[in-house]
Length: 436
Image (cartoon, rainbow, N blue to C red; front, side, top):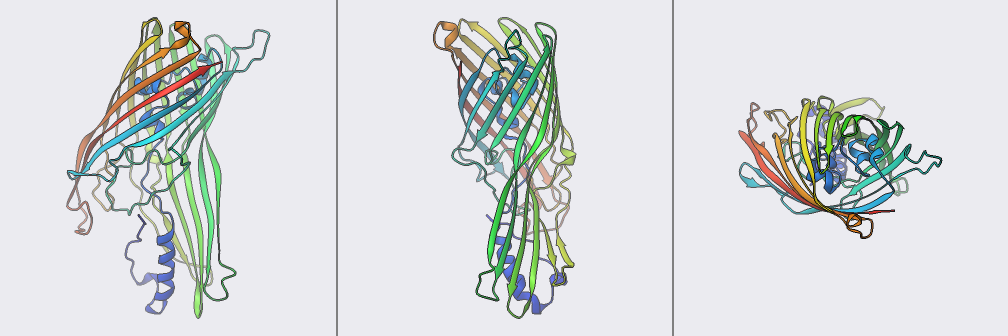
């Protein structure tokens, strides 16, 4: 789909300027417009089958390279180097006014990672740890989807796999009961320049696009006042993918057209996570409380600036604040070493929706979400075999149905006079980790 700018008044120009405006609009329609706001895919699906089976309650319980997402300090739980590969599949079952959503199709994610203590020697092998984990949508690294502002869609349950997720971290354990960690999450910035020359031979026409990395910090602390108890505190920085494309159009006998397009294509909020884990073999129990600062969330819609021939701004086409509010989530999980190499897991989570009532032009469909998860693991090394662990899980997320009435009189709006969203999401995955 393409973004279609709303109809504008004569402030865009006189009738004599319609030809350059048509050219400009044609260029705008050809650009890859961004879709609705979304959060980190690992927040919805989990990072790794072990944590996903416990509904993501891993701030204090992460024990592998999944700690790069949940808590960098939890890398200190590692007992040796390990690498892994995983596959996750999911299928939304979403409805807009009781009609199926186009997003209702099965999709897949590929995950992999590596983590290890750093062998410093002389009794220091348990001091420093490093790790990296990544998740990517099949054979793609990054993709931008487009929606008109008023088209109904689910910003937190649709196409959450359309971008690479990359986390890296390092942890330091100066005391046996204390570990600190820091890392980063990576998102790209997309910047470009488009010039279309209809005056000369076209030699000056060009397109240039640069993709740059933007890093956001993740910082964590893990404290063990007693061996069975782990307390964790994590701060995750906000991150945004920016899209910036200046556009120039030169047409014979008409002043040059200058446009600048800027948008936030993808945005993750600041988060503070508190975690507690209690382990008395054969049982581990964990609980997470996460506060997300969605009030600072950027609307994933473009700002279009039009300049006159002298370089002065003549029109700015923008959108309002989405009005998101802060939200909390609570996650609880358990792990039981049943017998020998076998482990079973279960978890439950509640995630509050940050999306306000959709009473205006936009139709962002969301509601409070509940997740139930279960899984199992097999440690071949504990059974006398090679150092290989296999973990599997399945999870179901249900969204509380929401129905909003429009206060804006607009019969052309797809959500007028009322808009209702409902549905669920089913996911499952398998991880294989190898120790060294």
